[in-house]
Length: 276
Image 1: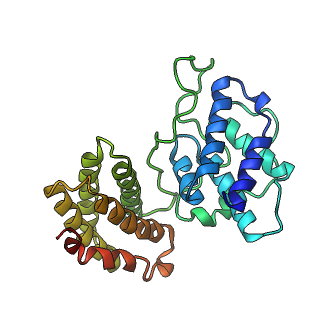
Image 2 (image 1 turned 30 degrees about the vertical axis):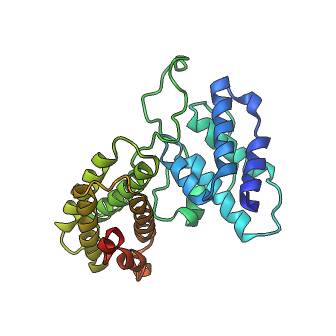
């Protein structure tokens, strides 16, 4: 566990668990703490949390604090304002009304560099379902598991092309997770990626580097599908190495994207050699 992870773990341990309304909610907090503590890639773990339904603000608050810790080695312990911020976001994610006013911390969305390119939810998380007048039944989980991800909505002002580019990045994230865990729907997700590639290929004025990436990606995915290689460990490694450049590319402004897809090109140009 690195220093930033330890900082966040300690912060989560200091949250007033007794103010949560049920054992399930307290177990959720412990689940998040454990995932942060054991993550090999903290940024990726918090991006996963971001995609859990209703948890965008909670993930962004943790990313904001993590960024402050990484940029300031003198920060050793969380303060009350950080703990209040994270706890208020946790309560919102769990559907607990917050009677007290939000702390006057800087808005999370304004300092989201580690998460640049993903949409920032509004300061108050809009409910994913109509508000209920009574708490959910004990038979239904209060909080979706980390695997219950939803596609993040495109930020306001996105063009149709930008929204489609982000959709491809989300699908590539899902494909990587699917091949890593060997999920039964990995073939279906692969087909969805190919369909999204077709959509992007038909759009006018797409950047040339993305067009090239899509062409290589389609050839690669069609090859592994035709040859039933989805369970091959080499495929898992390759998907990981070509997914990350795309994820970085969609998060950056057009002026800052130069060369970001090059590492994927190097892998995809000669991918057949890996299987011969």
